[in-house]
Image (tube, rainbow, N blue to C red; front, side, top):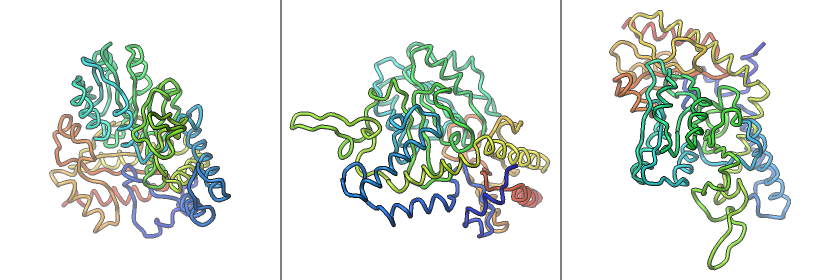
Length: 400
């Protein structure tokens, strides 16, 4: 039986009596993660992979162990396959800047992507003179696989797709898309920013070639994330930056890159944050990712049912809770979504997100909502009582 109250005790910030429902943007951080970062600064504050003194040796051991923990958490074969970067955006840009796009090649993506997995490919297509094809779902975020089969052909170099929409909460069949991509010799990169925090992740099973994710959405610190690179692409993929830490040998007329993942982690890394991310993975493993997923569905089910009962409220995305994670976007009549969010914060102590959620193509193409939506997103420390507070507040706003 999941004990949400026990989890809440690990988050002192929740004592401020605010209902925090902006988890799709950034989760809160448990005390265990904060203490792990403090341990680094208090006990062995030194650079990694360089020194022979005891502080550096300890920091290096902890840093490499955090890589192992994170790699295991996403089902990667080894720590070599996961580069520690700043966030999902940096991971996606590393892939975009590494790949070659021959004339006439094509990039395929979808209209529901976060800007990080859309604008990146718009720029790549323009830079390399290749085509960009955009696949669209229905208004509930359901894709027809025939549309991917039509879009992905032998000229396709890369397919870029999210597993979970940060707006609709819908779950995209990435494994099936990966299979189609590989049939045509194309690579596939996944935006895993919302998947990794909310459900069990197995990159080997999904078949993706790359997957980027962010620590700050999964109980970890800000400024740290990961990029999974499959074994086949590990030494074909060029680093985004090179310099200190990425080199095994240098002469006046050449250099050799270090082994992975060091070759992708230029300069002094975010050591404390990487250790914090490892601790966040350990925390989520203790809870159990199947438990995290089930709690998401339970909270999402109640939010959906409650909002659908309120006159004047329109809910976007999957109508069935089992087809989404705990991300629910909605509008209240013709009230500007920012006004709804401000009212929820100022009058009801409820924190939600409002606007286009870095997904303007979807807002314009699927819903005709350039002003965006209100978005409530849950995580493991949210309760059914908090959901009821949200529903009561939205009903008050809808009544005017």
